[in-house]
Length: 309
Image (tube, rainbow, N blue to C red; front, side):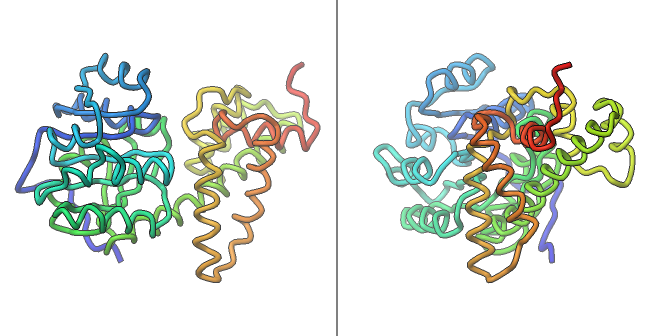
């Protein structure tokens, strides 16, 4: 049961927010927060990303600790366990300056025990971490079409509502710490399957002689559509996956986490398991840095569908 959905009426709002990790998602979130009137303090190990963030009005920080000295609400948008551990516990990490007023909004897709470890380290200094994975692609993040699955301290969640509304279209408090990640695993389980299903259907139609753009237009307006068909269909129509909103190599990390999560519960996920081999094939065929819509290229190869003519 959803424990709370809060859209307005917060009692506290900070106009300063920090963000650590300025990749596809972090960059989009920071842009929307700036547009919403927030003063955004950002940090990333990549100089190019820091420069792009500064160019659009963000204030660069030298380290995670430097971000925490300037903002008491900080979003983490990190790609891996190693990056998470470094930001929390590394030299000039958040743990070195954690205090009672600090709230960390952890938005990544990571194993729950990893997030719990970071939460406990920060709690020793008085800070609070919320587990807040996001539903949506990088393209959706740009248009503020994200949903936040927040879990953990409900008072801390309420203190962050204005921030959520600055970069997302919806936010839900779903329960105790970790339940947000569980909800995200369920969501990404469906994303994995629906993305492959969209590709399979597109290739079936094209192999039958139907025009790709017409398939997208007609099927997208019917009962067979899905959010993945709508979002990734245009890339499949163009047969161009270079503008990645979720890279295949990054998605492999999510697939592994979800698979391990289901296995630990002894819960069968046969459709999810079947989709995994298609993403593996995408890696083998050189699509590691392409968008996950590239599974359409994999299905085309399997069907011997030549789209060059």
